[in-house]
Length: 200
Image (cartoon, rainbow, N blue to C red; front, side, top):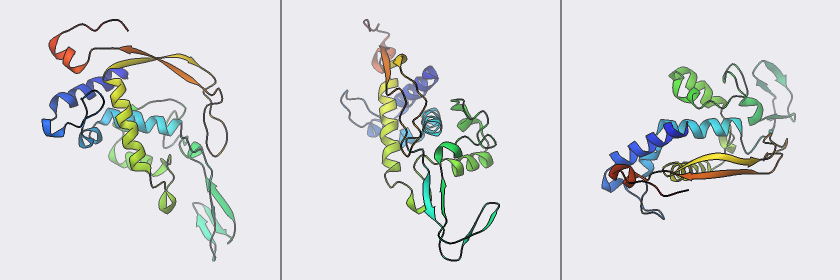
């Protein structure tokens, strides 16, 4: 997946106009319009947020006066506290087959109808009027972070604790750590010029 992602990033960097360039610490960047068009990058982000949402839930709500119907449940009385959890919504096997598998391709291969269903069940930032107002900023920053890394590096897991998520409103890994090893690979300019990359 890293090779596929890097190819997409490099192809995007080569194809963008000078007017699309934005500056970062290395003087090489990618306009947000380009980032938003990258399907592999989008799929990697969505699948990671699906399998490991930071806010596991539940997001609690109180049934208003007059009661409510929720799915097959009729006549839920006013004042009842109900909730939905991103962790469980994201593991609906009808919507997300093999839900415990990290499979970014599911976001690329699905047809439009099923993709709309997946989007409806996708709750890493909540949903509706209480949805996190920072979700667009967060996803853009994460995309920029991923792109900045995988243009120039390959990563492997050097050390990790138990990656099962803590059961709670916010859910980090039980083991509390994930250490990555970075291996430098050819930059865009070096790829174009054929230069070798010095040691890691």
